[in-house]
Amino acid sequence: MNMFKKSLFVFVLFIDFVAQANVTLEGGIVIEEMQETPEQVRYNHFLDLARACDTHALKKLLHSGTDVNAADWPIFETALMAAAEAGCTETVHALLAAGAHVNKIDTDSTTALMRAVAKGHVSIVEALLRAGADVNAINCMGSTALHAAVLQGNIAIVKALLNAGVDVTVVNYMGHTALDDAKESGSEDTVNFIENYLSK
Figure 1 (cartoon, one colour):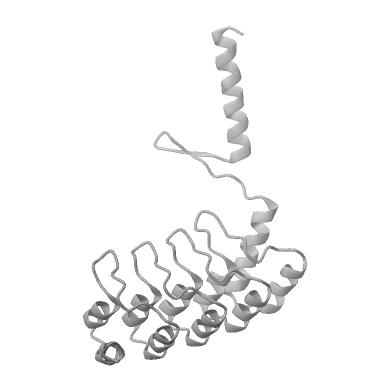
Figure 2 (cartoon, one colour; figure 1 turned 135 degrees about the horizontal axis):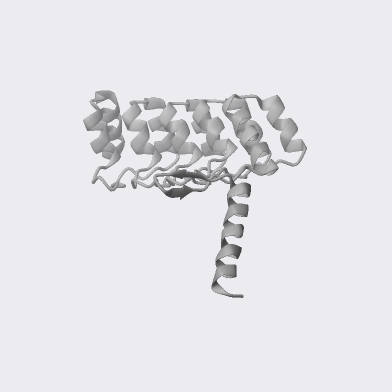
């Protein structure tokens, strides 16, 4: 095959790729926008149901074979993470009963527990802890769920995490312990609570 035929062959392959991948050109850069597969569409719908607390419809998809632990791309969010963040207590219980892995992480190394803590969902935090959530998992900033809890000033969640054995001495990548963050947040109740815990 001579050089012209090779170039023509490569060009034809590129055109076929563009047709299948639905790429666009921005500033001369090829941006790939691969079309979603039917399975991806199905799972995105599953995530939407989890966020919407639609437990009944979500259970139907589970019964029809949807993987409870599948994660979207590129964030790698699971239905459990979505439901925990949205405050969907019944949905969280249904997903855990269906075998959802409580300690899966997304691209920020954030867990379902961390998401629930950040939103102040006490009952979901307690449910995830009972299901075996790793209370000492750290995210991409080196912070535990306790760091997020003190920023919210949520004493109930702080207490639940401490009772579950969270390590109060963990220093994140900003050089802060949870107590440091509590002091910066201005929550005197949280500061006093942690200091009393540490004094025991």
